[in-house]
Length: 318
Image 1 (tube, rainbow, N blue to C red):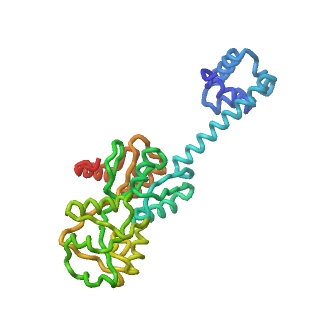
Image 2: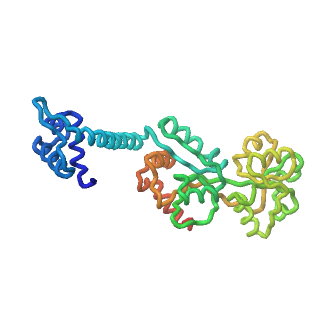
Image 3: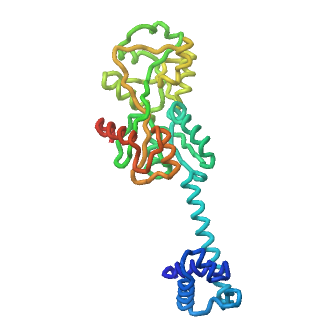
C-alpha cells in the first residue's frame, strides 16, 4: 500500500499516543488533517482502526493488528535515518582503501593516524596490493579509493591526483664499494647482479621501461615481493638493489649502503590518489581525501584536487 505511506505515518503517531491532538502536534499539522488521514486509511483498508473515547482514541482489534506491523516498520525507518545521520557525521561507517606497502608506509599512514584520532567510529580496511591489483579492485568497487605509484595504464573513468614525488635508486653494499663515487654508464647494470621487485609491480615496469629506452636490458638475479627484502639482500652483498630511496634512507645515512650514480638521471615517479568517477565517495572517503588534499574536500572535489587533476590532464595521465 505504498500509495498510503503518509496515511500510515499519521496512523503510527495516533496509535502511539492514542490521541489525535498529540499526533497533530507531533506532526505539525492540524487535528482535522489527522482525522481526515485516518478516515482515508480506514477507507483504503476497509475497516475501522480507532474508536473514540473520552480520553482520546483506542485501537480496534484490526487496528491493534495493523499497528504492530506499522510500528515495527516505521521505527526501522527512524533507526535507519538515525544511522544515516551518524554516518554523515562520521560517527559510524566504513572506509575501504587500496595501497601497496610502499604507498602505505611512506605516504598514507600518517593521514590514517590523524583520521582515526578524529573519527574513531569509522572502520578503516586497507587492502595491501601492488598498483595493478589496486586499480582492478577500484574498478570492481571493492575499495573506495586507492593510493598507487606511477606508471600505470590510463583507464577511462579513473581520476588521478599526484600527491608526492618519489625517487628510485640503485644501492650497493661493501662488496660493491668500488662503484661508489663513480659516474656509471647505465649499460654497466647488465654486468651486475641485480635485485629487484617482481614484474607485476609498477616500480619494476617503470625501471624496465626506462632502461629499455636507453638500450639496457635488466635481468635480475633475485626478484622479490617487497622492497624491504631487497634492502636486506643488498645489506648481505647478494647484489645491487633497485628500490625507492626512502626504503634505504637509514642505511644510506649510516654508510652501510650507498647509491650508485649514473650518467643519466632516473626520472621521478609519483604517488597518486585514484578514484572511480562512477562510484561517489562516502562522507568518510571525502573527509580523508580532504585531509590528504589539505582541506575538507566536497564531493565535487576541492580546489587543490582540481588543480592537480588539471595538471595531470595536461601531462596525459588520463
